[in-house]
Length: 257
Image (cartoon, rainbow, N blue to C red; front, side, top):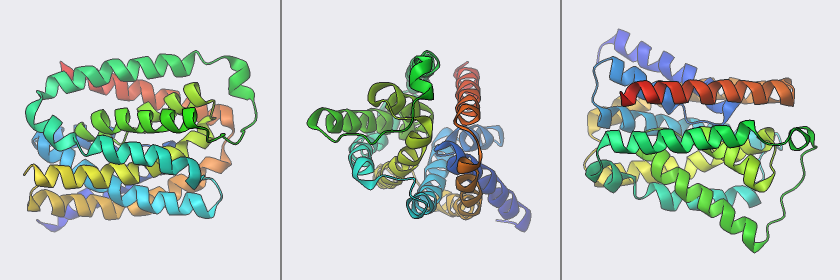
């Protein structure tokens, strides 16, 4: 790989890292289309994206924990779901046509976006409350993690675009509570996804090299993104998330056609 190519991968990682830290997303919505536009195959784009997610999510989650933004007791259950769901990503990516997967993800993302938009205003303005970890809520966290892990990792997307509104709607968590949980989920789902893709012979050595370069850049970017979250109001953060969801949906539809 030449020097210019290495720098471009690092810059791409830095940009996606900022998004990962601020929005709780894996950055795949940027990396996958960028790789496709550069002429790379879908499988390589997904592999590079997942490797980047593994790097940025670990660093971002450590930073969130130190700042008191991450509840590990809640994160464990959603992470467990992601670990299970993402383990099927290799088989799903191998045996399911990409267009079908993307079409399903478009529908699920649209559903999640509409749910997020139409949350009652009172629920949007309420103060953050600690989630009670009863059996029902644990099962809900695992189910959200499994669902997001299967579809998101198979598409090279971290899943925050889907998980944040689901956590907000079904468990009453505020977006600023959901973002750190979503990023923590990506730790489990991305590592599980890398193992699954490697075992399915989708993730090759060259993709590993590119993915690690993007990952190094994302580590630096995610530190900046995490620092930005406490500096914005809940309303601005929510509106920003809605813009990102809409753009993600638009890009997915464009890729589908």
